[in-house]
Length: 140
Image 1 (spheres, rainbow, N blue to C red):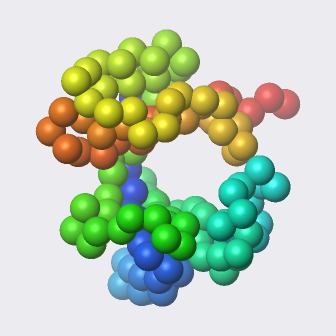
Image 2 (image 1 turned 90 degrees about the horizontal axis):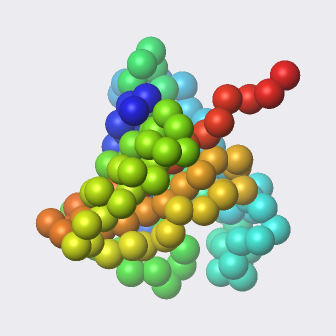
């Protein structure tokens, strides 16, 4: 594994929260809104164009990621985080997804995501949410 990252979810206030955390931590913030996302996003995303599709705070080797939910999606404060594992290979992501997902629930099967990574999400048998990602090295 390359690393593990905490991934937070917000209900429309991701930008404000991540700007606050960035100021507190002295970290660099990158934001992508739903409007900047791919055309394949659902209709609800297009209507929520100012919500954050992906945010990333970095300072040195520390990284914190986040996004807003789509309007109308279930949101429960206190359960709005996941552990995101950055895998080193396709074999590793398949193995870890299967192992951690044993007796759990697949939220999003492993698939080739629009940003170029292999990605999937699940809730394990203990109720913990996980994200798995493998991004192959860039060519060229």
